[in-house]
Image (cartoon, rainbow, N blue to C red; front, side, top):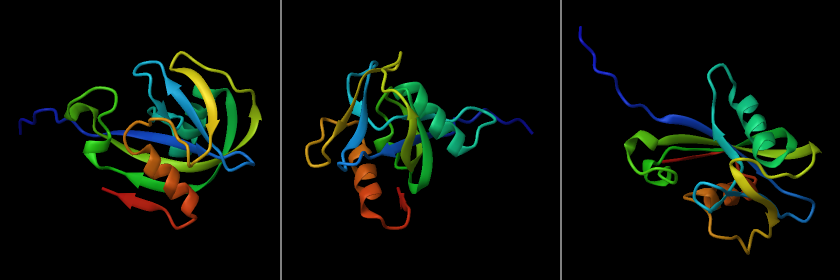
Length: 145
């Protein structure tokens, strides 16, 4: 049987973090200048939680702990924020996290790290506002798309 390689969605994770003032932690990306929830692709051999906490640390300098699943987002229209085309379709898994250590610092992928009032968010990539709203709702995890 001759199978052609198929493009498949990539798996990504995000950490939704709030401070004591109920502000959400966002990172400004260096590749497109847009604000986002910290996160990125899962590496081979990692669990979703390990990837989430690694990405949070790499992009913000903050160490976290996962509290709960926020949602799973698979709508391909909302995953085309870095490069256009079906090869960039990602299934995104967001977790509510709390900070347990570290110091805020930017990275190669992020130029600014800042907390924002949830009613005064900057321009965000794709469906990040929905994920923040889902994290605030306290409802069981959402499955979108």
